[in-house]
Length: 302
Image 1: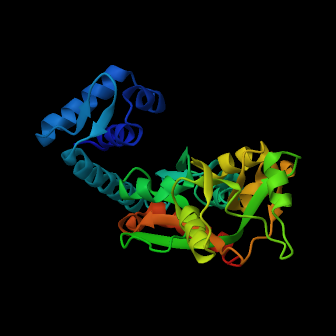
Image 2: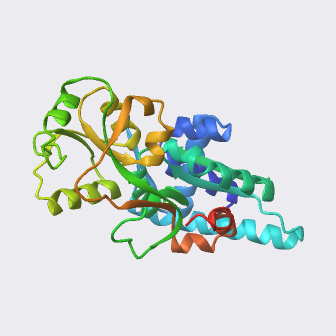
């Protein structure tokens, strides 16, 4: 079973799309499909379920993905050992939000590329709340994530920086802003129960916000639940409600001048942002090297 075939399978397992994997690997769709079929014949199990609408891993496919990752990592380690040059080569799959690519990762990747130019970073972006789930499913090696109240035992977390969570209101005159201003009483607090909120649909910041609501006895009027802090800032800037987001996301947003921070009763905790990975993946020299570079880059900032 050659490592090239394993790499093809890992690409399909990541994208769940034969066409996209073909584009990545510069192969035809039929060549990708034949490679997967040969692996299935060698294993004696169906690794992927596919129909006209979607592709998904079978239980055997999920187990085989773990083997394929370990086997390719071991092969890369052996090549380095036999080659004697000590250079890392291969790829690391990294998941993060759009904001994190330049607010968190930029100095890490700059240092990593300088130290290990032969390693390719496969970047996937999306809602940071989904990062840990992707790691547990084996879809990525490392994710940028907030630190949760309960970290799954299979995961390791490397804190890099902290960002205060901020309540944001529209800066322009609108119905929501009028509600915030009109609700201010002698104690300086708006009528939080009456204000429409735009909240995260899942993730660490959702849990923090839910705790804050409970602590202050607020029954929030939820206008929308959305994926991603960037979307929350955009919706607040349009005057649709009040939202919560890390300060670094707000400041990096193109809408930063269209929102303003509110002072709630009782501070929200800061969000600890860092790298997360399956503990077993840190045995890979490629993953461990990126992890170590990140730690050195941010050592003085936490």
